[in-house]
Image 1: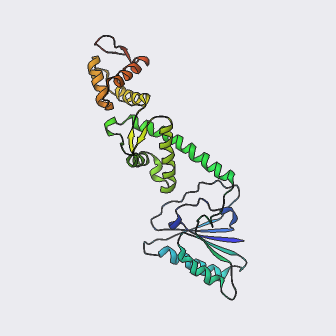
Image 2: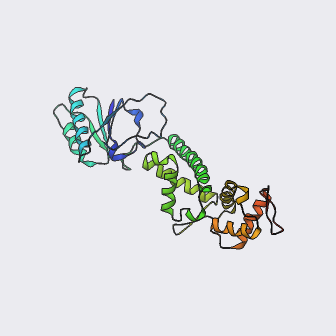
Length: 275
């Protein structure tokens, strides 16, 4: 039988921890931590006790965890093993102390490096990867809708800016930072895969004509008909301005798509008619 004492302030994630093997789990949260993330599904019941540290102070959580280790070492059966889970190797001293008492208990520090992390079954890893990919696809679609409401001139132009913009414009800003960063990387990969964007030396290039068309169409349909461009030349200028297009053939492709989608009815003459 095992108890886990988890320094969540230090590790920020419960990934790669086989929680099912613990009879009880004591999860220590720092004063500034508002939530925890469980990315794994559990078929069996697990018992998690949350210990929230109220005050911000240096090593405050460490002292609380050490207190609980000593308390339970005195109270529970010595056959119960203790696992302290943290990247802070300072806990090794108290684990050694507990193990070297006359009436000793097995107490070990798991730092979650490659040699000590619990290996997850391949099926669990595959399920997590599928869930992450599904989340990425969902957020990619949400973010493309966000882009339609933004002038091309104001679109993120750098990779870091794009990552921050995806986070700020979706509910990823409320999720665990480490998990959301993984999802954001997959969202960007999805946008690249769909040729929605290209990345050149950390610079974002929005290349897909259909994507630019969607952005302009959303902008155009929000305008009252009497305020839309009425001449072909002014429509082309408006497209070039809003989408920041320099080449006339790119503007012409947007015109062709407007015609193909029956948004405009006549582009042969100078006068433009809207459906």
